[in-house]
Image 1 (tube, helix red, strand yellow):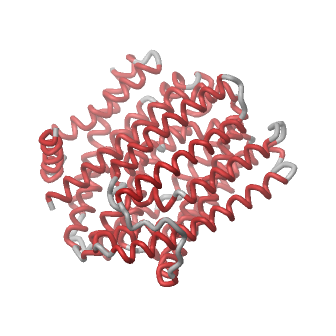
Image 2 (cartoon, rainbow, N blue to C red; image 1 turned 60 degrees about the vertical axis):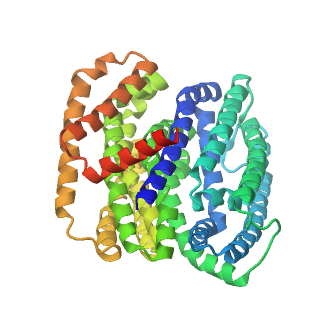
Length: 504
């Protein structure tokens, strides 16, 4: 287990680097892009990007199935099955790429989606570029999935860091020189082609079993689709929960209000983003351990992961709540902060819940508990849709934020059911009492200190970032001083640090 602990923590370290890197670019580049494009045009850009993300559902859950079975086969050292699986995956992803491209090409022929895109010159160029971008990204899926399934997060992180830097710098250069959204999508297409070539070369190097041509194995295809179709239903529900507000909000309130809603969301999604970077290893690790039949290590993985995720997510959430208005004021503008601070506060609570629910979903996927996960996802998606229809016309962007938060209530039941029925964990009331009480106590202390003392140190964006970092560390420090951390967690971190120092 010591080796596994080290491996999980090492992969987590790389995921954290990949998580922090885009944040650094977003802090600097997002205000430039917003002010260069304008509030309305940036809203159109967010809308088109959301459509592009939603069409990722066209793979019908196959990517998740391939990741799961590749992790299992690799743990069992069954390279014959790996070749059949990945060759079949290449064939499926190629078909999905063609289908997605056709959808975008048809869309480019429509005179206008709605009045939403009126005034957007030659938008069909951007749509075609987005279609090609989707096709290239989909074809790359087999190779990019390989790194995570084999738990080589160091490779995927290094690739992502370099390509993200190129992408973000190109975007800011384009908008500063007055280029439109079309140019942004064309540039992303070029970068996606480069990414495909890099992923394919490195993936075939670490896993020679990857076939270089399209194959078709009926058994593996059926197996992937049986797993994938249930995952697909779950993905539809999850994507609806994540993107539905951004898709329908422009039609109710216009693209400008989408900007006022989406930018606070971009800040708060860093909370589940951070937890996902910590827990990205849960899916392949759970799949591998299940393939080996090691239930006890699965329990340990679950317990230790969620203890640490809860505390770290709470520290970031309290930081956002403490300086919500100041963050928006110095990041975008005072006027923007006046209109979006309430949304930021509501979405901070929302994304704290998602920070716990997202890793739980990955864990359940790794265990293959799709029916339960899908039922919960559908419940939350339907609830969110109903609440959006009710609250959005009345309360505007604040109503959309409340709808999102209230729809996440079933996540509490997901934890209870998982621990009781899938992991057979002993009574957990004492653990939850200690965890909830500890975080409320520490959160209250930090919030008071922030509002009375630290907030007055914020005079610009640099000081806002510095004070925010100090506040998050203060939370963790007080949590440690009050002895709320478990000894196992501290020992795991010490083990990781010691081995890293030893390597150097």
